[in-house]
Image (tube, rainbow, N blue to C red; front, side, top):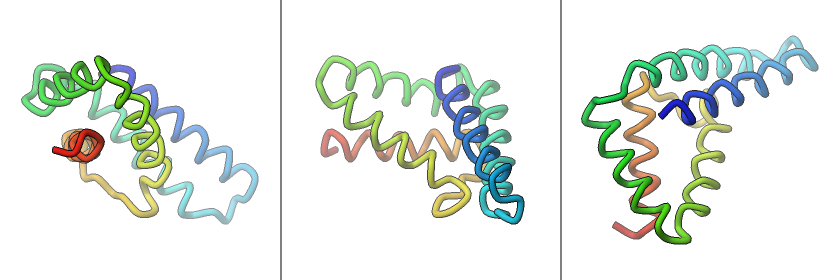
Length: 107
């Protein structure tokens, strides 16, 4: 789960580099704030039902080649947080990833 929090933080850093390049980029600034909030939320979720479900799905996917497709979809989803996707909190983010994982293996 900490890997997901780290990924969110890296995406927030990427967004802030975009703001550094263009200080008027309000979308990237707002996205970075949301991504940082989601990362902090994720660090508080271990043991939650969503966390357990996500972990189980990732373990299952890792036993197949589907984990690569899921990782790509997850990266694309994170890159669009604050633009097309605005999960309210870490659990909503996890639920979105769980839905992506289900689509990966056609469930």
